[in-house]
Length: 264
Image 1 (cartoon, rainbow, N blue to C red):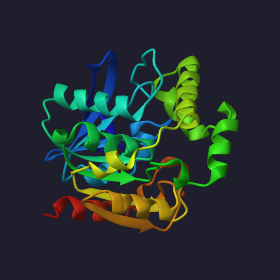
Image 2 (cartoon, rainbow, N blue to C red):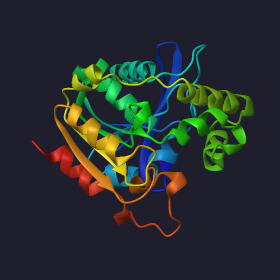
Image 3 (cartoon, rainbow, N blue to C red):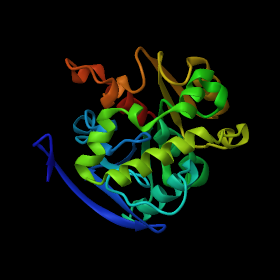
Image 4 (cartoon, rainbow, N blue to C red):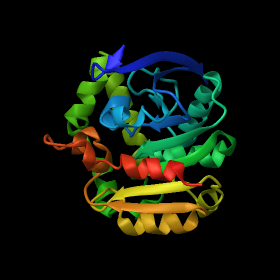
């Protein structure tokens, strides 16, 4: 099975913590785990950069609880549970340690991996995280409270239904994602300061989280690098809702990613 008709890929499901978690593996080398954003699939978050990462890494994309091809459980979503699920998946694949690249909610999950499962983490890239309520504008939380299914990006709906053609499951996933943001649980300073893995924080200068928030978080993480990139939420990696129709691979931060992983 291939993506973009050229890149070899193997996929499967693993039983982890009571759900059946979908994963895809590309390339060879040191493992690089990709964790998608809320409401997304592997491809909507990372589809543009997987072909650029696969030549140098064993790239492992996952779909989290209730997302894409992964089953659900009778509980709300949490970053902690997502991190525990991903940790169990790595163990089931026989991977003792990995680099991790998470985007948006997936960045929060990646940082929870560093907090809860430090032994599994080499380096962490957290793209567009939001760790505290004051890290974005008050209007964002108002929008989340008032949000409706109709406002969910059509690209996310289409991607979900393409791999799991079940509109009831799509609605459940939307509602659970909305609930997680409505009842958003902040990361404590102590949790953030406990992160021992080297971290690269990446944010757009017109992102959900403010640049000020990302700078403040970078000062709390003991071993942290920081990149503020011109653009919106995920534009720096070709996330599907910010992807420009005339995009070029050189628009993306893959060289920055590779340099971070190569640093001693």
